[in-house]
Image (tube, rainbow over all chains, first blue to last red; front, top):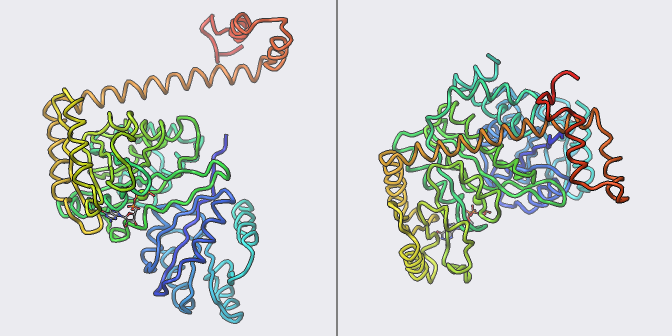
Length: 134
Length: 321
Ligand SMILES: Nc1nc2c(ncn2[C@@H]2O[C@H](COP(=O)(O)OP(=O)(O)OP(=O)(O)O)[C@@H](O)[C@H]2O)c(=O)[nH]1
Ligand SMILES: [Mg+2]
């Protein structure tokens, strides 16, 4: 029996105090059969990377509504790499302009960017495909 | 020795994390890894924390981590949350309350879903304890929701078990499951800021006095895990119980029983696995089922026939042919 489960860290780095969206996504991922580690508000990049390491997740999903995605995302990516987690999937969700999204993808900081209102199926489908396609 | 195990013994966090994943995923290499880890285990003291959902277990772990760290002890935490029986997924949220310790190199926290496999949870937890033990943690805390048999089984892996109760919502002593009462070495009445907490403590004390004839009488400690009240007393009680376990020889006896159980389980697991592997290769199991359904055969003689066919009675099940 293969009991391999996709493990996802849903993290809220930065200062914004809204985690409704992050919780909706967390529930969606759970309902798609994934194990979701949820750590609450106001995480520092260091906390996110260390949690990802200890929990040995396949995916890190950042929910950033504060507009600080262009500083937080590269910082977290770098810390993950420092921890030897080069192949962890890094996703960003939040209010991200098209230019910013393109830049994050191009620089390799994020594997995918999702903006509010995108259907959950799209996120779960993307994760499944990316992880199982390895 | 395998690379991951060498790294684990050197204190590598990533190695610890990845070994735990291999255990959880029932990796084919798992048994070999555990064999190499085993000689390095047996030093950590294991504390189980169980209680109703929302009773404050994770908040208490957070408070205890503070105490343990200031006493210079390193700690591994295993936080178990239920897996959804519908999707197989889980939201593991215990870490929310433990964020103060997220970056402390002396603390390693791992969240686990129950994953619903029969008896599998307690095994994975026991094996994860071994990883954290070999990794060098002085203490291992295991948090589980106290609702089912599997959670009670996990607690059997603990040297000291805390049962967390609250005064809230008619959660009165009468409604507490018998099995849970029996496993408590220490009772915690958490949320002592809420009304009715003194009464709950008194009820628990009364119940202990009625039942307890053992040399250890479980203390009843009132705490408020949000304001860090009563944690000194709780930590003192934990140390006292540990002292009692060590001096009275109970620790050795508890561990002997655990080894007895684990060895029994392992033997039975291997025997069963061998039998069913052979049945898969050799026997048309479904034909047998059909014959019994059609009442051409009875299940009792068929079971013997099956074991006959895989040469079980010759003692060579799993050997050559
Ligand atoms: N008033 C009060 N609230 C508390 C106390 N301890 C914990 N809480 C609150 O109770 C809620 C649940 O706390 P947790 O520590 O997550 O409880 P838990 O038992 O780990 O919960 P599960 O893991 O979901 O079963 C949180 O909102 C806490 O802030 C306390 O002593 N007093
Ligand atoms: Mg909890």
